[in-house]
Image (cartoon, rainbow, N blue to C red; front, top):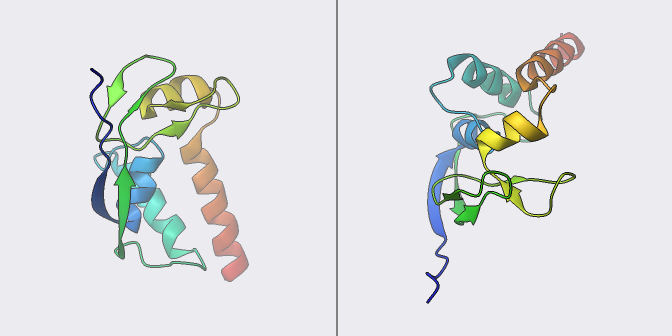
Length: 115
């Protein structure tokens, strides 16, 4: 008999959600700082410490085959249908794409336009 899929509700700050939903860890201080700047420059929700409830549903990564219960899934498209884990998202889907560099570029453009 298959184990039922149980979603759980978690409360995260906007900053925590941005970091973990992009497959990074809060221990990656460079990414956390970039994420904080990005949120502060956002016009829609500029407070990185605002909290919100999110649902996390267990999923199986379509690349590595591991099951994850405490991680937000990433869309595996266009390579496969389904979801992938943060590590596979960075290794496979985002290979050659430097999210940190893109954030830095976006932050610089926003600061230039706001200043």
